[in-house]
Length: 227
Length: 234
Image 1 (tube, rainbow over the protein chains, first blue to last red):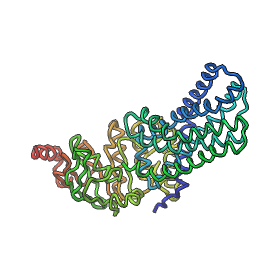
Image 2: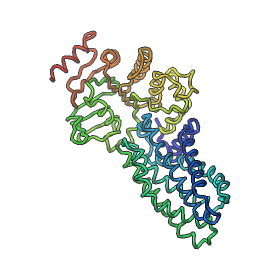
Image 3: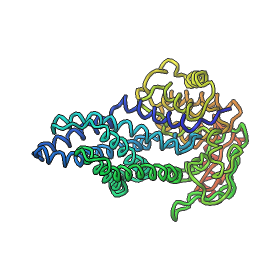
Image 4: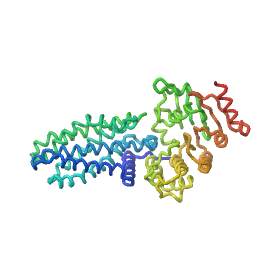
């Protein structure tokens, strides 16, 4: 007789499987990293800015880079399952479907945070700016979570249609706009060294977005995967 | 063990299954024959709770669908023409992953037993993408059998296999069928159906139009029975 696996055990199994397959193939990670580095190189040469101006645009460049790199990873996360037929294998398992969602979300989050961990020092060198600020790192962690919470759900919806590569960004960016604006504003404020009272509204908005959209995506995932 | 009553499934305006009635008892190995587009895959996907019926009643392994789909999944194994395996994981890692999702107790022992069933002990630590199609399909049966399911659904599992691989797969299926569980396999291969199945059902345009125990057929009689059935409904 089988024991139905617990929610977190199943979540961990899915995340571990995703990270192990990505570690072996490095398909998504390589593409995301090269893309992200290219974007900051291009911005660096295109915007030959004074140091003061660089501080102002840094948060914007950083989040544009992370979002576009993240959308590459999101497209692949479910497409790999669908193309190899493994999506049926996951849906046939006697686990809470939300465990599949959180497993994918967690693995995607770790991959994008790894990209960010490489991106920040490279960006700091190119733009001669210190980005290792605790506040900024917390904003990156929260911003990436909010972006992927919505993205993982929408990618699961988009994977069912033929034009998924086109559909995902069209769906994703409008929905995640509040989180991205909050993340850019909070990052800018931390980089400019503004007091907490200036950062707090954006930080709170980002936190609220993360909470609300993670719960909404969790509740909606079962319906999305129904057929 | 499997029962469908007045089952209807529509995709938009297209009706794929039309008031279909079907039943399978424990221990039966039923092969579902029929031309392309007859509705075989749709029927199997409904039995696997991957599709909802438009109307009608379905009970599989004591679970009423779609209401008890979650309970059914623990009692069901599915093998399709795609192996549902991860190429960048080894054979053991694939079985370990699915074992975790199914909450298989004494997982290591069970994985060993499934590798032996599939005859893949020697390549247990090789990446699945290095396997031939036949090896992947045999491992796929190991994956489906990992949770010791009461019902095994097989959707054209021989697709793309060479003769030797087909024979090895047949041996594995015969072994699995001999353990008292219900097997339902969609296929186009009449000779294989006659050799493996205890009963053959013919599905045409969304209805079971004929059904016969294979023991009731003369040797090589299934081809004549199939042709006659198709002729009769034209």
